[in-house]
Length: 77
Image (tube, rainbow, N blue to C red):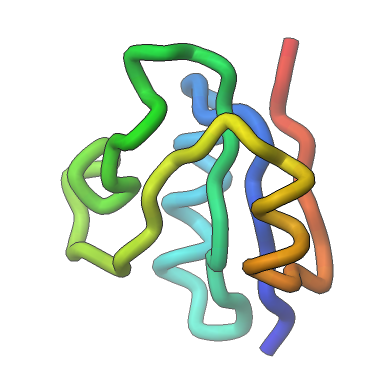
């Protein structure tokens, strides 16, 4: 299963993240956004879904190094 990070947790990023979480063929391993109101938010809480332990961060470089995603989806405007 490919590990995926989502960069941009606005409405599009949230929909993509939701699809990744509910699809049994991929793993959401990280989420990144620059919106201070989202930083530190649990993705599961934001999406009204089960907690998967993914906290939104604002540091893409650190996210890639720690999360080691196979793919990063950019969902920014």
